[in-house]
Amino acid sequence: MINKLNTHDAGIGIVTAVIVAFIVFTLGAVWYSVAVHEIDETTFDSHRTTALHVADGGIREAMYQLSATTLNNQPFWTGSGTDVSGNCAVVPITSEVNGSPRQLGQYWVQVTDSTPLDLTDSRYFIEAWGWSRDTESRQRAMRKIEQEVDIATERGFVYALFASSGGLAAGNQKTIYGDIYSGADIVIGNHTEIWANDAGFAGEGDITTAGTLTIPNGSNLEIEGSAFVQDYLWDHSLGSTFGTDVTVVDGGAYFRKSTVVGSVSLGGALDPTSDLTAGSVATGLPTLAAIDPQPLPGFEWATVVLAHPGFSLDGGPTAAGPVFEWSTWANFEDWFDDNRDAMYGYHYVKENGSHTWKLSQGGSTEWSDDFMLVFNGNLQLEGGSSLDASATAPVLLTFIANEPTSDFQFGKNLSSSDDLQYVVYSKGTVGASNLAKIYGVVYGETDNSANKLEVHFRPPKSDIGFTFPTNLRVMARPLVWREVPDDPLPCTLP
Image 1 (cartoon, rainbow, N blue to C red):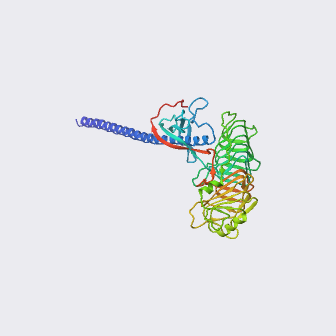
Image 2: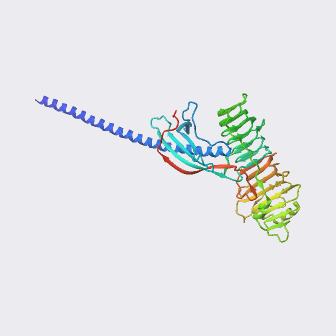
Image 3: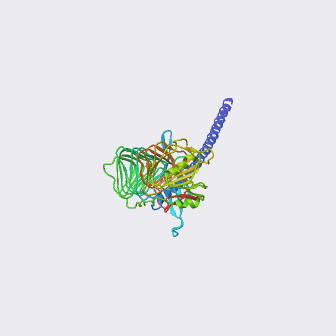
């Protein structure tokens, strides 16, 4: 009897153990399912956030492209487009993780004219779809953003260095922080560098010419931005670098040994002997829009006189300033010697001939307010100067070579800072005959620099006396931004 009872109790223990194990495994499965679900939800939320940021990246790309294409007189950028198979040409966004590239997402963008029947309305409608991490991943998330923008025109000085119909010769070691434009051929000198502007000011480091861009042997070129060329691009140097894209509208190009980080688009052909590393190369493109020559802005002394009453001829005893006319350089320099510790005013020297103005000779030169010097002859400006303690920075220093035969040259040891910003303008030639560094703009009919010139683009706070007959730059200004439910794309995803 006792043995039978013990056997029965053992059976009950086995059943109980099995039930307990079943409950434990069931709870484990539930807990595992809940954990996986929570992880999936967290991952999906993360993907949705990433997809929104990726779509916004597409919006930013569209705004940049709209500004760039309109600036160069091209038809407006319509979006990412399709690939050779007719599928949506989605754009990847990658990041570096532990030294290796990792794709964060993809986007596709479409741009349309908001008011195609109204030529006076410059609004555009941007639609951007974003995916994390791609269009086919298991836990992919898609977000869509819409952005309306208005193309705002900025008039005035928009280039760091500008040469009109006379063209531009980038002499020995020219360094530009901002954009360069030439209405005729550009010939690059020894190691020219064009960088994006500093301190938050405009300028992507682009170079634009309505003629031909020639880079001779031994004249390395570094461009952080893009190159836009009307006729041909001849690069005979070793090691030229283009930070984004190269576009040649009419002709082809030759690259001896060059790197183009972005794309190369040519209206003509690529010389088959070229040694070129590029993201992509497209040739024989018939639809590239022309780069129109831009004229030099106009300048009228009378506008300055009318805007600043207090006119004085040759600085006579009743001079109230700040507008002075001088018959000779000697008369102007007499005034300069008496006022060099607090320079100010608007001055016109009518005498022709050549003159060298040494700012630091005979004592220091200090600027107490905006200063303008207009002259009919030739001027070489040398030496350093500083801001008067009573002045409000920045002070604008404007130098105008007022005749087609006039010449302005930066002489030795000329330097400035953000406190002293220059507008240098010549209806004739402008250039650097020696080492010079300025903050401001340099505009001329012709640039003939022979030595190092460093320019940091700073748009002047006043355009007094100048007229700008053409719209030189546009900017895509954001209006309404909103996230909307995603809808089918007008093309098939790859």
